[in-house]
Amino acid sequence: MYILFDQTVDFLEALDELRRRLEGYQRFFEGGRVWIDTRGRSLSPMEWRLVEEVASQFGMEVAEVGCREPRGKRPPTVTPLRPRPASHPVDPEATRLVRGTIRSGQVVEHRGHVVILGDLNPGAIVRATGDVIVLGHLRGVVHAGASGNRSAQVWALRLEPTQLRIADLIARSPDDEHVPTGPEVARIVDGWIQVEAYEPGAQGGG
Amino acid sequence: MPGRVVVITSGKGGVGKTTTTANLGAGLALEGYRVCLIDADIGLRNLDVVMGLENRIVYDLVDVVEGRARLRQALIHDKRVENLYLLPAAQTREKDAVNPEQMKELTAALAEEFDFVLVDSPAGIEHGFRNAVAGADEALVVTTPEVAAVRDADRIIGMLEARDLRNPRLIINRIRTDMVRRGDMMDIDDIIEILAIELLGVIPDDEAVIVATNRGEPVVLQSRGRCAEAYRNLVDRFLGKDVPIVALDGHSKLLERLRSWMALGRRPVSG
Image (cartoon, rainbow over all chains, first blue to last red; front, side, top):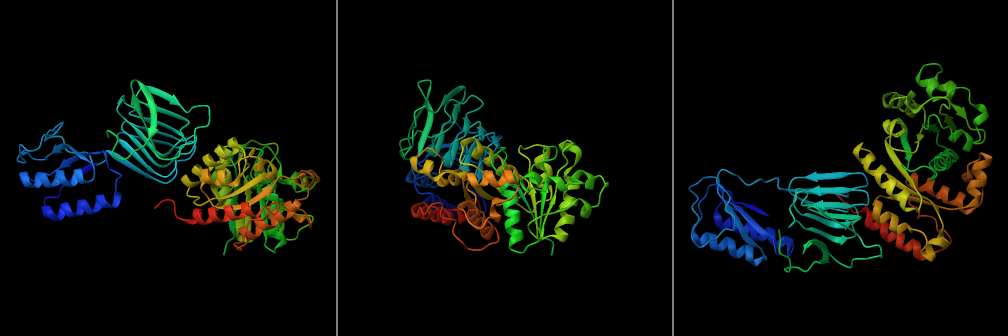
């Protein structure tokens, strides 16, 4: 998830708004990482602390900080994992939201993550370089991490894919009838695509 | 006000598009509406045979489009039902003898004269399908309770939506309640769950339909029989009457489940 701080808005107001928005999603973002773009604003150590607090309150980790202008100095209290160079602005298009059912014969391709608010029907294909999240019934074919990212994951409220691909690995659903009872996540563990029940907070994010 | 142009389509062949078109058309005409059926399956004439009007064909759709006949000359009046007409397909030509623009003109001209123009689409998703949907205001999707038919119906619904034929409605044909109850056939819930569109009607699998079709008389014209009843029910629902989907064999539990599903289905899926 990306957070953009608008310079024209009061910091505490922005933080309150962020908290309100996250509350609306409850535990959905748990285990996720936050990318922060301050748009050139420099935050005080106190302000940074507050942002981190809100993030951790919702189970997220501040992974990366980006500033559009070099004057945004980062205080020593923050140790970003991979600082984004100032000349490299955050791409707001990194996640694509698709509303509605993806039907047989339809293909969704995207450079980044894909979130589908609906079902992925048999015969439909989603290909993404990042993660794929289906807030519905996943029955089609998904290829996550399509450019070779083995840490990509596939999440679905009901995960019954015809076939699942992550990076260069392919898995098909077992021939015996597997009926998922709840949300599941698929990812690569020890060189195999594995599916397990989604437990909030237990995932590594990505 | 021009009439409604409705395309009846399925993707997969042999699921009962033509039979559905014939029965829906005859049923609407019985209710007093002026109805014209168009057989858009150029090269494979079927609808005239199902309607028992084969021997009356002089001109066909391609003759009209190419200017060899006026529209009125090509229309065949049904031998039983007042207000029911058929524009037959050409048997000797290929599908590409007509283009979507010509179909649009044709259906628009017919919509001036008729309350309903029903277009019987050919199977497949190619040229013939594009012709059939070209002038349509709305679409009905026919499927049978088979995985392959449902898959194709799903594909067709996606293509209809891409052509701005939003909210197509579903007709499930040839359902066998005994098989569904044994768990040997997809039930209505399974189908609706995948296709997620409004269910307009369910037609049971019945020999009476085959017999009637071979005789060239739509089964809806029969006074009794569960299929005739199911088609009349379909006609009522098509006309916007608030009637429950016909009880297939008094299995009320199924109906209850169906109703709850319909209620769910009315919630907007996308925003």
